[in-house]
Image (cartoon, rainbow, N blue to C red; front, side):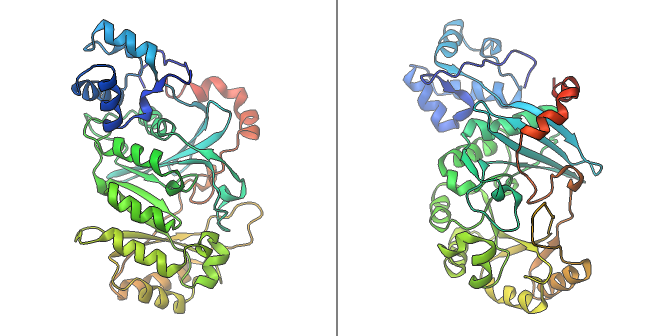
Length: 376
């Protein structure tokens, strides 16, 4: 965001401009009697020039700026903490307007920078290996609250879509199940992929789901975003235990939906996420079953070493076991990588996001000036 003041009005009859993708913003301006090109102008100010003050959008007429001040607002969440891991991973804790909290993680790698954003405050799915689900579910995020995470991170990292991007990839893989917040998430991905939004290609925006089967079919009708599926087991019996949504949408239905999503798109693949739990799902026999399950589905595998959290009954598979599992998949022709654990020292690794404010607020209050001043 620019250093210009951000409007904080939250009247119910006002529209947060960050809630609108191109189609919605064009409809908004049409109702105001304005031409469609106003959408590109405003989106460029918001997402290319990082200007969040309508009054500073100087190629809009004074009359239009005044009407926007009256009918719309721009709001972003408050940064409670901004933590940097020893490996360069960075995590933000955001406080939302209603007091809920979410976390966002940036993972720098050579040639790319991936931002992991949240779609819900908490998560209702209660996957056994994920600390987010253990804290319960509060509510869905708005499109504005999803997009604001990218805006704030982009500013903190010094990025600019018009120059060399720092954020090259965005994954909806933080707190929450994106497909249970369908409309807001789709609008957010539209902004991410819009040329006047963040201009990311469809292969660089990934939506990760635990397997909400009807929503996968619906997503195929309205979006070309990349799909990742949190699989984590090769039998319904085990997946029912560790990914409870499987009781409603079992493996056969989930994998059929994945195949449908790929369709006839030759270059498209589904990313399969598989957390490695010692003695639970990491045997060579399960690797071979996984190969059979994925036959006919263009896919690539991410093997994820389990990241422990307090109260978890699981342990991480050892490196030798993970390597053996990976090699079986590779020999079967499945592109497979072991995801390197990142940000574990700041609880930013996969499955560790919890979004708690109480203790973190106390911990960081003494350094509030340093923390909240990072991105100013």
